Length: 288
Image (cartoon, helix red, strand yellow):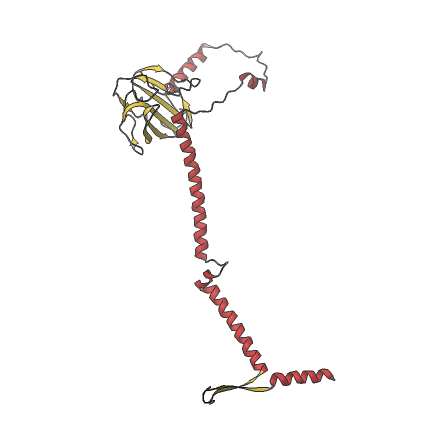
């Protein structure tokens, strides 16, 4: 019996009518009046809260105001961040390539080359073979063939069997060789005696990647010919090309001299570097 009475009292309280008056403070004149119940107040307040939440959600979802709320970012900002990430990755990759390139140039200038020594006996012992039944006598036809192949390949820097490569080297100067290529003495080039102010020519088409004075080797110019090939010209009296210039094979790039601490007279110290390692220039160029 108590519960129905409590429900009736709660219903009566919710539906009990009240009047809300707005009076003039000076004259106490009634301006506005409202008839209210507690239920009406609860309904109006609830709808107001729902509408306020909906409007706030719309503002956050469909207007630029959401960018000012911590934790939110616009699609434009995300796209820009993604583009910057890709650009940063590309720049890092390009920086690594440039560092490797500069490292190879530094090796050319300083002659700092790592040498790998193999133990020939230990290599042969890895796979012992029975050679008792082989005919090791060299025939005349074999000797003639070897001589022919050696003459054909002497001045070819790349494999002649490749039809996609057409590359030849031009002698930068003509003269007598006073000191040849010797890795044991760390002499990674060929010294050719020439008269002072003799024209030094480019060995092949390429780009000047270094054209400066150095204390040890005087005026030095370095050309990049592509195909991982670099040519170096040291101890020059003067340079006629600057860094970044494009040159053709046989074009004058310097004049011969005797500059630098390591020079003992007018000559050209010429080097060839393939894939970051020095090669003997006389295998590909005739200086006489």
